[in-house]
Length: 116
Image (spheres, rainbow, N blue to C red):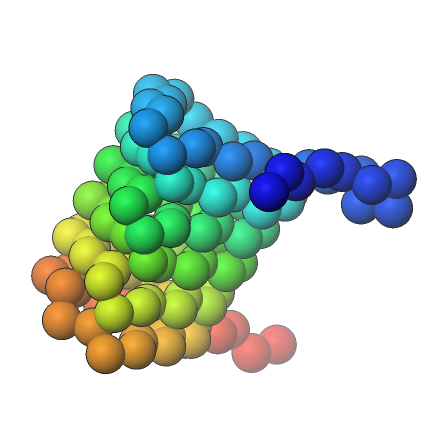
């Protein structure tokens, strides 16, 4: 399956395929899908670390789907952690959803939303 940008989207997803390794940073207003290995900082609207994917570094996103492995801090609005996910580091979030997971060895920090 291939992902293409249509004229209405203006932003294509960033995909790091299985078997690929990226050393460096990713910054996008769109979706980042990690099926391989990324060592660096990821800033995106939505970050998906797929089963078999791994991030060593920092993640900042509105939405994080964690199926694979992450070593490092993450700061997100909403995180969905699935059964095979593994994480070390600090996970800072507003909303946390965990589905039958036993692989988290991280510090959880719930952010208090600032009220104006």
